[in-house]
Length: 372
Image: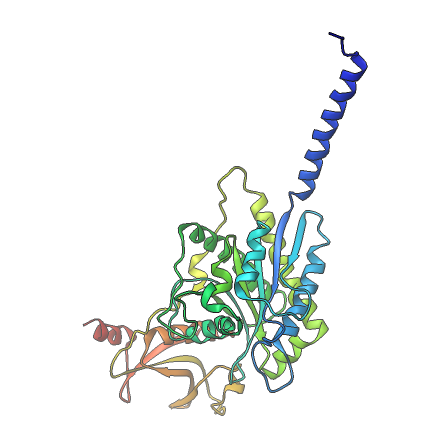
């Protein structure tokens, strides 16, 4: 048996080591933080209807492309787009792209719409339950399912127009929800603190596009394109860059916080109290709740535009003082939501008052009546 020359052994040894090294370097290069950016709607699905010519699918795509451009400047971040052009994607395709990429984050960008001049940002994370108040949003985002040719196959047993339909959340998704809330909080904080935008809070909805993603996921409503001022802002290049930058900064901060965690257990500071709870109605028969937002000696016209767009403004004179209120409801949980909206609008001292007939009563007494 011939002895193999030492030079050949050395050659193959070096080749083997070099191959391993190259593989390790290639793996290290691909071991980046993967962010999947999803521009909502597209193609035959234009998104929310407006009277002012703004189209949700176009604005969402422009914000996503700007956001992606900014994130791609970071070498440790890999950006994947669900769409980069005006094409129609089925909801299950969007989540499949993120799952196939084994992404670290899924961020879906949308615009809101309403028949009033409502305004402000909202960030949604996955939730199992839809209340009557947030059902309208869930329906609007989920009903794209009906535009899909084979929706009966992909969404068996789920009717996006039915309040009774719910999406079961697995144990693994509950973990992702906590991390999603962390990112959502950073996004909304940036909108408020950096862009001076009104935040309508972090909310939970049973949205299909979030349900099928197995990583922290958020759906960002960047504002109302039906609002005259906010729609113009979102439709402008300047507005799109500012919105994208605020979201980019939130993602970078989230990643930095994640990188500080060492070991297998991820521990992020989750402020679950900041999530707006969409509770079932808490009706108190015979009682009307309002939110007092201001008191002044000036008699202002009780119109929303005089009070930062808050709804259902009413005025009451008490001596020489005029008191101003937002809302009128027998649902205490709705009153709490209105109070939170007033505070986010700048009325930090807003508080709930209760009336029985024409008589003002303590809120605590009103709630005692309900509990009995």
